[in-house]
Length: 99
Image (cartoon, rainbow, N blue to C red):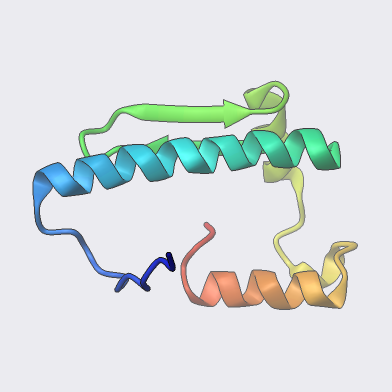
């Protein structure tokens, strides 16, 4: 059985939206954990629900990861990213998927 494509728009039904949020949140946190273990990287995920509840995951100390993030240069040209990483980050910024 093949999953159908879903249209990316707000789910109007509040119950369905909450169920989808819970499932996708748990999936995202699981993937973040897997990424940190498999690739030996530091990962931090912060999620605020519609009601303002905080959900987070960090592979190490969250405060240290956030501080490290803040100290990073904002200009992509100054970092040691590959060209593919730079293109991905620029695409993500243009589509507002990262801060």
